[in-house]
Length: 181
Image (tube, rainbow, N blue to C red; front, side, top):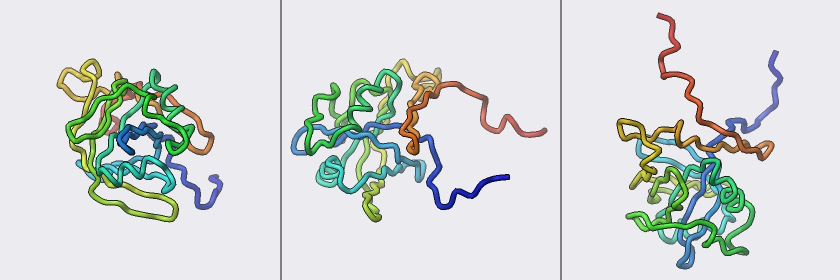
């Protein structure tokens, strides 16, 4: 028997990401767990409208979305712990600039450098639809075919209802290998 919990957002855990944008000439970082794939060349990040980083995303039109591993947990947690409007987070991470101008955290195992193609506003949220300009991956985190190896990247997951982090990295099997013959 299943219990009906009503209208509850329960698609967790989600990848914990650090989102970076240039705000007033310097990088600002925020933690975002509401990320999703909306096509093979598009993602969406959903951010509370009050976030300081949104200003930079709207003004520059470029943003980085980085997966975080265990080594990045302290920076991830600090990025989500204070508003860039009150705290200067530009020194939180060593960074470089992607070809599209977005700040890229050097410590991130995988970063998507993106540009905004649409903004979908809902009550209290800016939902940025992003086209991927570049996928930047540490070479040691690639497989033999030169693709991201998510076992090596082992992204951290975030679970919203209890504000908890979870580990990933174990491969369970190949897709479509569990079918009956």
